[in-house]
Length: 125
Image (tube, rainbow, N blue to C red):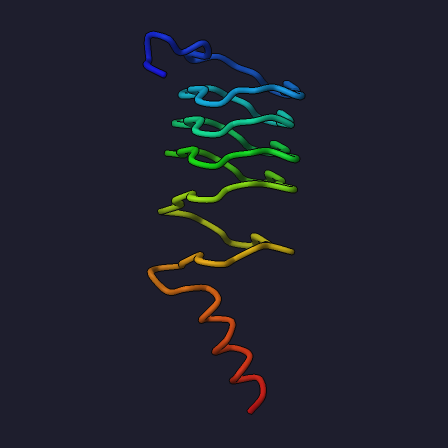
């Protein structure tokens, strides 16, 4: 979606509920979505210079989406598809990941499954 076709240029959607929405390929560049709730298809969506603080993403497909210069502090994610996501320059302090399929996931080039395997072997010693 090009900038000229962006339906959300410099707009605020604070506390908005995106329910049962198909927003595949949507361009949320420059949008303030603080406290919004997403129950939607956001495959290949673009989030750049966005405030997603305290947002809730529940049963959302974010596969292939891109994120640049966004605030996700206090956001909550449940039942997500983030396959193929690339995350960089992150502050993950106090973040929690529970019940996740980590197959093929890498942190700084190292497979997470390998890290867990080494951790478990060390715990056995």
